[in-house]
Amino acid sequence: MSTYTTEIPVRFRDIDAMGHVNNAVYATYLEQARTDYFRDVLSADLSGVATVLASVSIQFRRPVELGDGTVAVEVDVPELGESSVPMTYEVRTGGDVVAEAESVQVAVDDEGSSRPIPETYREAIEAYHGL
Image (cartoon, rainbow, N blue to C red; front, top):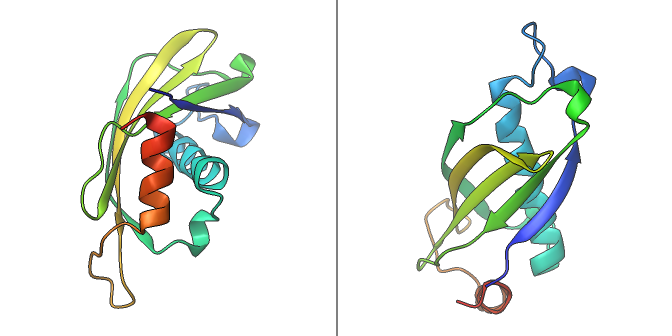
């Protein structure tokens, strides 16, 4: 089983008045990881793929600070639904897990109703993660 990892720089604008990455920015890190995953694993531009983010949850373990420089976001797809792509994440810096998260992407048709995951994407995800 393979996980996908992408590196994301911690930017000055990510830092809040408390001196660490604002909690809402973690959702942006996950979004960037999904975008990179779709590009690298599925050879697709996420903005051109008919999906919606159905859910996201994040558990924070420790603050990330500007001096940490980058975060590495590991993405795994533990299973596939008919129309859903559940993803799990570990956000790391300096070797430490700083957050864990889960999200669900759902394939949709032109009317916004769920539809089956396109077979080419299903095959690529299954092959990459050994499902």
